[in-house]
Length: 343
Image (cartoon, rainbow, N blue to C red; front, side):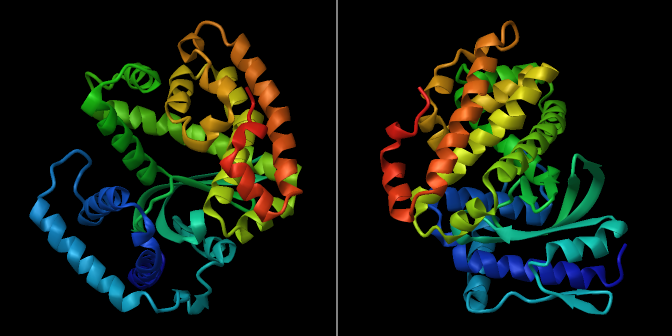
């Protein structure tokens, strides 16, 4: 383990607290309380599925909000490493120093300008096709919203602990209503009914690979669209405009890499899971995919292949249209998506 590991963890976690202090309460109340519940679980080391004492969660939440009040105006602090202090967004330099010690660091700006930080243990490193993939297992420091995967430059970072939590929340939500559909098919394929714990691990392994595919797709989309796309996204001040741009890029990334690879691998459970999470703006933009009969993927994927091929051309054209538009136009299109939809 790296020297002064505890100091590094404390510095990363403090920056996480500052980010949360500034942005956490921008969520809806329902989302905020759910995320705080699971953040308490992670911080307390309570296994997924174990009951939580409501009074203890309430006390912790009050204490955390009091801490945030003291940190909201603070600046993000540099990270101490081997006698050197690193700027907290210097991800490449920091990982160059800590990956050989079995650690992974992530920092970036997420949706609606919220900074995210985390520090975790490296599980594996793979270099292929111009990308470095770092798969992280347990996490030592994180902010409230744990993002399972991210592409940063030429590096894909996948956080398996965050992914496992997200999958468990999905399975927990499904179990409350047990609605037939794509999620039911995906869970059944992994044996969730009889072995929920083992099924969660199987899903985590499978969806780790799907996340890597999606980030490879984002990398491929980035090559097509150039640096202007990220610059325009970073400058967006309108939430609907940002949601639209992210949805278009997600659809393009999945058409370029994710869906073709899952079809080629005959990864039917992962395809069902993809359909179960095909929602929001992505679905609104793509009525043709929303209407596809996902129950047929394991028997005949001809129609799905054709949809994906059409989608790759369509979403690239839509992305280029958005790239050539000013923010007011993108915002207007986000409220009237019919002009962009693939029916």
